[in-house]
Amino acid sequence: MILQTWRRFPGMAFMALRSLQMHKLRSALTVLGLVFGVASVIVMLAVAEGANRETLQQIESLGVKNVIIRSVKPAANNNTQISFSNFENSYGINYDDLRRIEETIPTLVNAAPMREFIQIARFGDAKFETARVLGVRPSYFRSNRLTLAQGRFLEELDELNSTNVCVIGFELARQLFRNRNPIGQSIQVANLHYFRVVGVSGYRSPSAGIGSSLSAQDYNFDIYIPLSTDRNRIGPTLFKLEQGSFSLTRLELSQITVEVGDREEVRETASALSGLMRRYHPAEDYAITIPLDLLEQAKATQRIFNIVLGATAAISLLVGGIGIMNIMLASVSERTQEIGIRRALGAKQMDIIAQFLVETATLSLIGTLIGILVGLAAPFVVTWVSGMETRVTFWSVLIATAVSFSVGIIFGIYPARRAALLDPIEALRRT
Image (cartoon, rainbow, N blue to C red; front, side, top):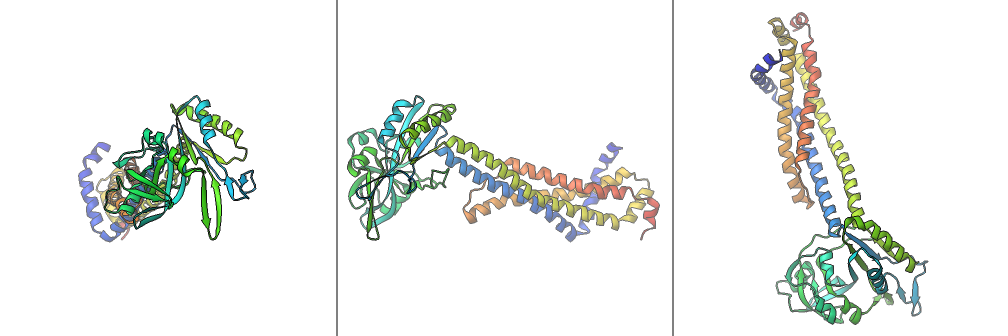
């Protein structure tokens, strides 16, 4: 019987299309429910996937084999060292910490120290008020996966000789030099120091704040100078003048990035560093961040986020399925006599069920296909309008298609069974 029904499938499909054509507006409105359902699933998962990739890239750029120790200004009531009549505030990690880390951590592969501060950068009449000046060793560029757009990075000879050279960020080079070649030119920092530009770093998307101790960063406005130059020529004490008052802040190092050889050693190394730092910093003027933990947390959070978004979008598919059930129930009521005649002429219950399921499947298929097209196009519009990264994945399209088609069929079973169970004599009596 099932084989005979399938042999009649082309004829049933033709009759289904003809039936839907007789009620174009009603069929179109029913299909819209599935269109928006499928499209919303694809778009919402594309937005989630884009945000997920951006977050994971930011965390991975910190290095999954790294442990980051960062200076944190303690609360005012902590045991912060103050001198010079309470004008100099001293806190954070220092060169002694760096030496102890390099001497006592057995899993250490590389330690990349860094000191940062905000200053005015000038070149001729052009200036940038909030350039981030970073004293770094040459290994910093590799540890932070920075690329080079022009010139060269800092080298060991620059660090050894404490030379006044620098590598500047992509956007800072564009703002200060406009259409001129920055290589070989000298920029002024803090109205005191001049640095010759030897390189321009490649453009890098700004990162959001990651972890409790890592703030948002825009690498494109940075100025990288040798750490020895920062230590010997600028010094650890920073002078700040605001509204007639001034303050002195002593900060030797802002951050130390500790790289280990294997991901399995990261947490063990972080534990050892925590014990070492706690011993020499009772004021807890530091914070330890493990990018590997942040990466795993982000992945777990994203999985939950995808489920929530998918479930939210699936409600639209549920509404579309209810719409299909509604139109098919109306169709059964309208075609009662037709069903009675077909049963009287020898049609089986399976034939009636198959006919209505084919009509339901046709509606589901049309809605699903249009929904896929809309869902594939919409993420590009979202990216163009908002600048937000989106990424359509194959599995999101597959899930939306499977759920949409299944919902359409499931919600069509009840009307089909209701039509098949009609008594032929009673059906023929109805007008």
